[in-house]
Structure formats: C-alpha cells, structure tokens
Length: 246
Image (cartoon, rainbow, N blue to C red; front, top):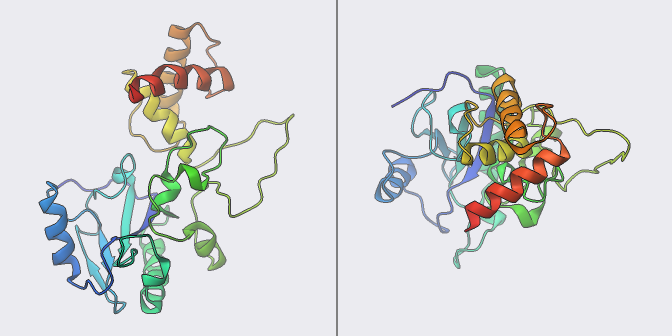
C-alpha cells in the first residue's frame, strides 16, 4: 500500500453509521471492503467512547476524499446520522470531540504542513465564486463546520472560504487564492478531463498546473496567462462540465 510523501491537509469525517453502532476500525474496514475497497478508507477513527484507533495507517494514502488522498490524513468520528439515516451532529459524543481536538493537535505537530478542514469543505465550487456554499456540499460529512471550529482552537486551517465567515468583495481587485484551495482543485479536475497533464490535483496552482492552463488557453485561442482567469474558467466549464454531465 502506497504512503504519502507529504501531508498538507487533515480532513475530518464521520462514518455515517447509525446510532449505537460501535464495532471499531474492524467494523468500518469490513464495510469498506464489502464496497470493493482494498482496506478501510480512513487513516484513523474515533470511537463513540472517545477512543482513537488506527485505521489504514498513519502514513498510508487513504481513500476518504477523492482528489486529495495523496496529500491528506483522514480522521473520522464514528456516527453522524440518526436512526432515519439523516445527517445529525448530535450523534457525535462530547468524548469524541475532545479526542478529535487532541488528535488534531498531535497530528499538527507530527505534520507541520497540515491544514485542517471538513470533508464537505472539499466539495467543488460549482459556481466558481470562491466560496463553498451549502448547496454545493457533495455530502453533509462531518455535519459541522470544521474550519471555524478548528480556528477557534488555534489549529491551522485550510484556506477554503465558506459561508460561516464574512466575505469581503472588492470588485476592482483580483481575489487571491492561496494554499489547498478547493476552487483550484475543481478547475484542475476539469483540465484533466480534457487530457491535460498537470500532476496531482492538490488545489495549488503550481508550475505544472500553469503550464497545463497555458496549453489549454493556446488550444482555445485565449491569452496565455497561465492563470485561471475569468475567460479561461468560463471556457473550461462550458466544455468539460457539459461533457461530464452528458
């Protein structure tokens, strides 16, 4: 099983198992393997009694968030849905949240580059406005806003904008996106649908991504800026979102 070379994201999950389910990592592993996976998807889980338990392994590349597995650590709390299988934060125990904070602190020491977010924060920014809004959430997981929760506790958080904090827009200024940005990751996915090679989908517009963007701009008759500027984003979405939906 492959290991991560870098760990720049920490992703908080819930297992979406029903109330009272308490079979530990072995139980989650059985569920995931029954779905055809090679192993449990999470690197680590936190049981209802607050006990942390290793899953796939500390350095292993997990299977918990598509597009980011190679750079992220998946930490999941058991629970997250009610008896009717509806997302429910109140199924998460205080002991789990206490352990979650402790493990996030420990892992921040172990992985100095790590930035924390929730699974739903990595949903694609479908309208391209730089904010991950509730209607764009692919899943409710982990049923609460991890980024402000972690920031309040002094933990490093991913630079992903959500509706939990004010967004100041300055029409005459270009917005700056830095770090593991889910908007950039979504646009990288669109480029790869077109066959452009850019390396890992990591939400960072580095040299390979900029080269791929220039190639796409050249093929599309656009100015070769290497940036995800408005004309480039519009063209990318008009071509590859339509194809993906077809």
